[in-house]
Image 1 (tube, one colour):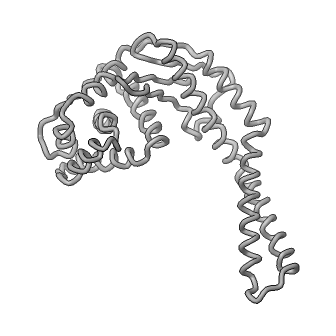
Image 2 (image 1 turned 30 degrees about the vertical axis):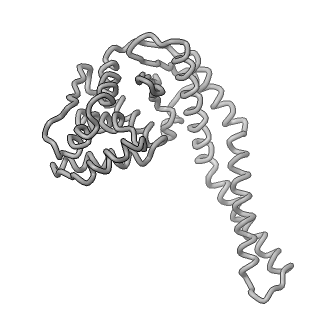
Image 3 (image 1 turned 90 degrees about the horizontal axis):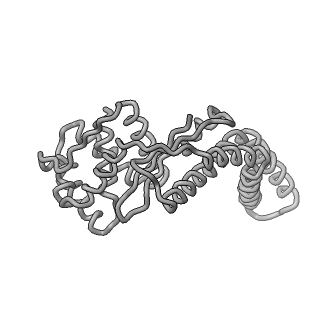
Length: 259
């Protein structure tokens, strides 16, 4: 079963968490694999459309990466052949005062063009198109389930957007011992771990800078070491709207809760 989650956010796009971004799991999914979409409440039509679009986009990304990984060795051999053939042909056809330079430069260019063309061909192949179609059909026929425990995560994000940003930054960086946002999840640890893994996967694909900051905070808090400079930088980035501070706080809270 493929389990996906929707986290609604106030005045922001919902977070659609799915394992479709994990390319390594592509071969494990069967053609008739059931898809379940969990949310804290009944979704509106616009939220359903938004979730469908997010799932389709993740499927396109995953299938493209999956087929390119499968065809990596043949593509590498063909490109090596392109480079070798073009180099020898150009070395005989071009005479210049700087031997090798023009031949290597042109051969590398032709090889890169060949690599790009082969990659596009692979993503449009019948195998990729069939796999993409199968997954999207299952995603469109998904079963929607209300999971009230997800409201805790949504409420955390909502509250994190309302509290004093400087106090939250100081708390995350251990400059202040007070925690303005306690996190309590009454569901099972396995479910919380699954949600946390999918959220970290989503952030890794959409905002690597935020993920790196989250890892920095996790290490900092494990070492129990305060960092006022990092707190000031986070607050400055938040004021410039360059960082999603509530989401960053949730990432840290989930990491500590799943330990």
